[in-house]
Amino acid sequence: MEAVKGENLVYNEVDEILEKYQDEKTPLLAVLQDVSRKWGYLPRDVMGYVAKKLDLPSAQVWGAATFYSFFETEPVGQYMVRVCKSAPCHVLGALNVVRALEQELGVKVGETTRDGKFTLQATSCLGVCGVAPAMMVNEITYGNLTEERIREVLALYE
Image (tube, rainbow, N blue to C red):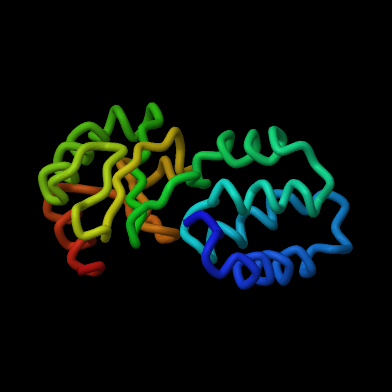
């Protein structure tokens, strides 16, 4: 989504987000989170605009956007499925979870389904080791995963 068509509208929306954080000393991450929620990813032109408005080097904004695994810099599916690959999840079956998701969704890790509904990603840790293996769909965490449980979870989003 390059902001060529409707550029002013897009930038007006970014300005509204920036205004929410005008009193913050370091608003970058909060702004990027809001932009990400709004568009589902961080468009490059919008990141450049944010850098300009916050008087930051573009490289600093890009660095933050690419450092954190919960930010996407390319369009993704409506539902982001993140599978935990930390040691506890790995030991308790994360590879089986990945295989089951790849089979159910018909995509490999890093891909988006043809209908644009699901993007499958692996992430380093979800912080829910007590219910390993685990995954998130957007912001909801699911644990104690089995192949059957995975099908049940995906059915909630179809």
